[in-house]
Structure formats: structure tokens, C-alpha cells
Image 1 (tube, rainbow, N blue to C red):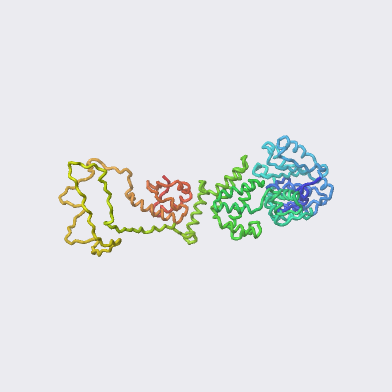
Image 2 (image 1 turned 135 degrees about the vertical axis):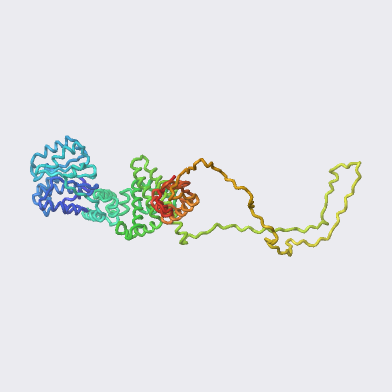
Length: 578
């Protein structure tokens, strides 16, 4: 019967475990020096070697001929543990045996001495699935077990374990296996299986596995089902991926704000059986690479990619600002979370593409920051001169040509309309006078006249001077609002004598200075304080007449605004929105 690769090539010694030297060396030293703990806790992500190390440790402490802390895998104890004939090593799935009755049965069995082995070992996998009652039943036995009992607990979610369990175990945290370690192990397995696996295909498998050796071997197993010569194309077909060029095509569509092109690419990938969740994850990792390139001086030390890919990533990173990249990553992360709980996964992906290509349709803070960053970039380019400022061409209007035709009055003909009216016999008939003909000089269309020069504003010395508002010495002076002598005058808002209230004109001038100062030290506020008004009530300066964007960015600029207000007004004032 065929055995899958991750079972066939499961590590048999601590030396075979990849990517966990900090754990394997410690366990080997404990076995070599016989300094065993009574309870171990192995925690880490999936496929990092927790169960494999638990089985190796159970063989090493019971091996008849250990080799430098490793089991020999040749004695009857090692072989019996491998084939399941030795009943002293018990592996329990806590997901299926999670009740208090199962733990009580385990506690009763632990009182018996081992049949053949040196220690009775209980490997409890996915221990976080136990109930609270089961944990309480295990506490006493886990704290003071018999001398021949060793507990090995394994879990992927250590945060779900009670602190009373954690304090009774020797904890080992398994890290995600590095890409280099996974590639080395895949090459080792490919050599033993007599198949071809190039470096780029092995690197792609390691990236998809995301630090899990079991996932990497499972993907490699699927690739071998397609072809024994494993290449990048074979890995892409086996993992449901297409050529990585689609990532750069999508980033180009995001740069050009071309939603139709992005949706067309998503449709093509969907028809090619590309998983939409995997697509959003790959896009997130792609923009993570762009973010690292823009943030780190030597991104090749962090990114795992070929030199050709690094060159393309550098070109793509120049098209985006850090704020835009963060906004895109936030949208994609939200899409991945929504895809996991929705029925139509394609709709969530298409919504994410549209949000990225049309940032003006989104009103969240990250989108606003991205739009502000794009405006700042355009302003800098305009200041440097990389974008020419050209006004739209104004069409030239031709000057109207006025032509005055020459009229010869002698050639005029008059129509006789006498027939249209009936003659009155009582009135004498009047004969029309003949039209005289004059010889006119030729007509000049643009005559030139010698005009006299006049002063535009003549000054007359003898002009009398008048005051706009005459003042009469004998005019009586009246108070506009006389107040009775016996009525006290109260101020609406009494002001201390040592700090007279400033006038509205003075507050407006100082507030204008504040706006100028705060825009220098805090670029996000530029343009959003124009037109606002300020009023002082005690130690509070209230801003009014502001736009809808100011309340969103006010928490970020409040400290800078307070400092500027105190500097301009010369006293402590607290700024708030009216």
C-alpha cells in the first residue's frame, strides 16, 4: 500500500527534525544526562514537528541502546513503538477523548507499571480540546505522577490552556520552519525518491507551506502525481496557482485605478480554478514585499525571492506610497476575513478590487490617509517640476473685419407703392420730388483723426474742498443708550482684571497665525482649518465652522494644535471642536 510522503519520511531521530535545533539539542541533552521531566508541553503551528518529537522522545527514553541522546531504532523497544506493539506508549487524541471520564480512566491506568518499556508515556495531542472538568481531573496526576510516568502534551493553541496546566509542564515552543530548511528537506526526499525537483519549484512549495513541513511534503506529493519532473508550472497547477505575473498585473491595475482590468484578471483566475482566498493572501504577501522594499535598506535579507523577482518588485514599489500599500493590505485582509464566513467568495474579492481602484468610494481612515498621501506626492512633483503645469489652450478669436460697401445713391431704385392705397379725391395730388444726385468723396473705412490731448484728471486750484462728514461745533452730543445712574451695570461674562478679554478681531488674527503654524508642523491638517472660527471661553478654545474631514483627523493633530495655540495665545488653552 502506498504511504504518503509526510508519513514515509517522518523523522526517526532528533537529528532528522528540520528547523528546530533549539528543541532537539535540549531534548538530546536531557536524555543523555538522564534529566527527564515528568511533563512536557510542545506548542507551535501545524506541521512543525511536535508529534514527531514526542514519538522520538518516547523511543529515546525507553531505547535499550541510545546513541548520543537519539534512539537506535534497531532494538525491540524502538521497533515495537514504531509498529504499535508496545502498549506502554499511548497516544491520545484529546479532540475525541476530551471528557472527564476519559481522563479518569487515564489516571487509573497510570498506577500500573510498564509492561516492557522503562517508562509509560502518554502523548496527548490537541490537549486544548479538553474540557475544564477534564483539566481539573488531570491536575493532581500531572503535578505528582508516578516515577514511571511521562506526559507529553501537544497543542497548536496554547492560549486556551489553563495556567495551572502550563505551570506544571516544561514548555517547548516550536517555530515555523524556515524556507531554506524546507527546501533542503524537499531536496533530500526528492533524491531518495529518485525524482527531479528544481530549486525554484522547491522554494515555491516552501512559500505555500508557510512554515509547515507536513504541508510542504503533501504539496510535493501532489506534484509527483502530475509529473516526476517537478517545476514551477507543476507546483502552480498542483496548488491551484497560476503564473505569478498576475500579481504584477493586478498591482499595475491598482496603480492606474483601472477597476475593469482588475475585475477581468479576477474573472480569468476564477475560471482557471484559482481559489479567491489564496488570491487575496498572495496579493497581501505581494504588497508586503513592496512595503519591505520601501522600508528596509536591504530587503533581500528578508524577502525570499530570485534576483529577477526582486528587480520587478523594486519597479512595482516605486508606483505606490507607504500609505497606499497599507490601505491595500487592510482592504485585502478584510476581504480574507469576509471570504471565510460568506457563501459567495468571488463577490468579496471583486468588492475588494473595486475599493482599491476607487479610493474615493471608501471613507475609512486608511483610505483617507492614502488619498492625502497621493495629493502630497502630486504637490511635491509640481514643486520639483516633474509634472509640467500647462494651462488649457485658449482659442484665438479672429479680429472682426468690418467692411463698409460703397453705395451709389444714383443707382437706387424706389418701388411705386401708390397702387396699394386708394386716392382721396378731396385732396390734391402731390407729385413726388426728384431725388438729387450728389458726388460723394470715397469712403474711408478707418479714418484717422488728430485728437487733442486731454489730462485724464484735471486739477483745479480754485476748487473748494468739502469734508465728507461736516462737524458742527454747536451740535449737542447725545449718548446712544443712556443708563440711569441708580442702575448697576453687570457684564455678561466677567473677566478678571489681570487678563482682559481679547476682542473678536484680535482672536481672529491670532487664530489665523495658529492655522499657519500648525500647517507647517502637521501636513495632514493642511486645508482643513481654512474658514474655521475660534472662540475662547475660560481656558477652552472652541473651533467652529469646520468641514466633515476635520473630526476624523482631529485626534491625530490635537497635541500639535494645543501646543501651537498655547504658543500663539501665550497661555494654557485646551482645544476642542464645537
